[in-house]
Structures are given as structure tokens and as C-alpha cells.
Image (tube, rainbow, N blue to C red):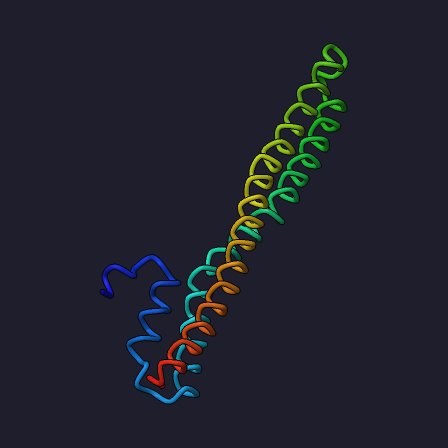
Length: 145
């Protein structure tokens, strides 16, 4: 039975409830609450990485943009600027915009994934809480606990 519940936190919760149904209701309730907390921690452990990536990538892109524009102004002041002024500036600005695009290219999918998994984690937590309550009620009605 346990092998069939792996990867499915709801079935695992039900298994834990049935397996521990001989315990008093208060003890079983605490076991189920702890199980829910552990499952939620497992599910949310990678969300911090996605959130950090989504929040910092635009700043890294912005840093690249600022550095690229600084370099463009340095090139504009250099000896090649008199002959190729517009080309020198355009090249520096293009490099700066590539940094901005790269930051957004990383940030947008990371934020979308973060929000998706955060919502999924919240839903899973609510579903597990509802199932735990249902299991406690059902086991109480059967006078198992």
C-alpha cells in the first residue's frame, strides 16, 4: 500500500490516518498536522530559488545595461569615436539592451513558475487539511478512534 501512495501526498495522508487510526483522536490529529507540514515543506522547498531568481534577474540585467551604457560613453570619448561615433555608441547600447533582455528572459519564466507552484502549494495545503478533517470525522464515526 505505501508504495502506491508515493508521490501522492493526499493518498499518503489517508494512509497515515488509517495506519494510526488506533490512536486517540487528539494524537491522530497532531500526527496528521505534522504530516501536512512536512509535505508542504517538501513541496515549497524550491520556491525560494524561483522567487529569488525572478526578483534578482531584472536587476542583473539592469546592471548589465548600466555597464554597457557606461562603456558606450567611454568608447564615444575614445580615439575611434571621431571616425565612427554613431557606430561606437550604437554597439555599446546594443550590448546594454542585450543585458536587459537576458535579465527579463530569465525573470519572466521564473516569476510565472513561482506563482504557479505557490498557488499549487496553497491548494495542496488546503486540500490536505480538508482530507485530514474528513478522515478524522470518518474514523470517529466508525468509532475506530
